[in-house]
Image (cartoon, rainbow over all chains, first blue to last red; front, side, top):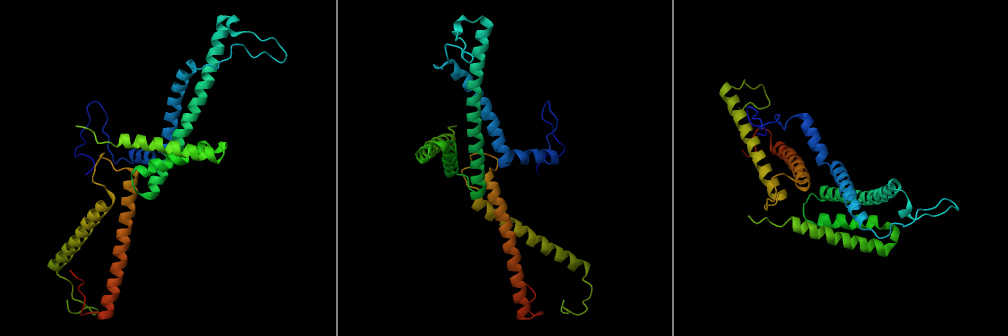
Length: 174
Length: 95
């Protein structure tokens, strides 16, 4: 019922037999909550890196002077040789991009894992899963800011996630 | 088949075939009922995508497990009832 009799091969590729135990194991791992959250974390990391590089170019708080050594002279960056200037610039961009990537990766990992867990627990697929997962993710990410920040993060993230879900679930106009 | 419990005569080939056919019918009906009940319960009809998502898969797993559990328990109860009512007289269970 699952594989076509005779193994019709897709043009230009090996036959994809869904009953192959390796393929089944791979599919099962990717559909598990752990796999989903790992994939979301990695993709969030990548997207966050790109976004961070872009935002680094628009940042207004890059220092104009190098941080001098203990008690040493402080030089303006524009006076360094070109290679040094580039190194300073790339290091700053890299650190900003890495921190944004980490943040996005954390968000993706947490949200995806929590939503998958809630959906597996409720055995239902509706908007409440995304909203609850968003609330928990926002709360966890804001946990160091005190209860008000946690509540605010929960509400904001839940609203954001619900809005995205509503938009994604709209029936396609065909 | 009126020697239930004592030394039965060997069932003929036609009777064996009839027994297997009856069992097949029961099994097919059980599978159809399971499919219909669990689909009604677990798969909403808006059909936004072709593959079962996680919620639906978990729901179907649980529905099938519960169906078989219920079926087993009800069959056991039915067997006990029919044995209580009298072994040979009430043998057929509902056809």
